[in-house]
Image (cartoon, rainbow, N blue to C red; front, side, top):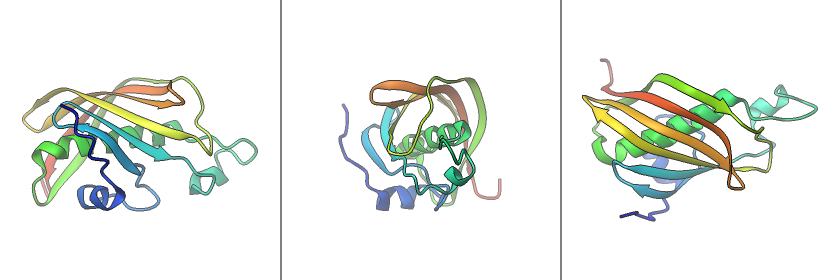
Amino acid sequence: MTDNLNMNINRILKLLPHRYPILLVDRVIELEPSKRIKALKNVSVNEPYFQGHFPEFPVMPGVLILESLAQASALLAFSQEQKKDTVYYFAGIDNARFKKPVTPGDQLILNAEVLRNKAGIWKFNAFATVDNEIVAQADLLCAVRQKGE
């Protein structure tokens, strides 16, 4: 069953350690704990990376699209096993593909589905869309650890 909880930025800030300018999830639209998530990132011309990437034709860097997908995936992982002093680490990226550029004014929809979770290692199939078209996709591997491990 999908929980259309519409997780807002205040809840996201409690779950993720990221802060401006690297917090890249604005809201969770749908969440099915331990299964899938749909979140969004509003891409604004005021993002600091647009000054240099690229001044004449601003494009969101692919690595930040992947980071957005990883943050959405972290929110999905934390929906099940959030413990105090837990940190979520990026452990690997496979099969990354970039299909279309993401530009200011776009609304990036972030989707992730759990492929497996074993011993704190999560594998996700993730993809991002703009206007219902896939702009990026990847398989993400992430590790949930206690701070200091």
